[in-house]
Image (cartoon, rainbow, N blue to C red; front, side):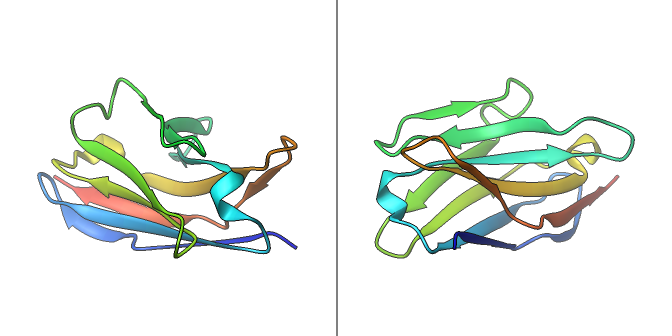
Length: 116
């Protein structure tokens, strides 16, 4: 059974940094595409960044140049390094895994709050 567990969220001041981690289990991690999404109160969930099994990355325009997604296949981890955080980055951040058969799994989410 695939499980995803996010960690690293918290409260940070505007301009600060956080690194989110997502630990995956129950899957051949290196074959999966991974992504980070976020959902702010009253808004729809939106894509933040994705990384394919081959390491290709994609970012939302709102985070380009500030956020970096990476993965460690040996540790079954995907990271989201977030720098120059803004109050509008405040949201619950979710990790998503897509298997080679295109099944999708989500983590439980981790709260990121950026104070002005």
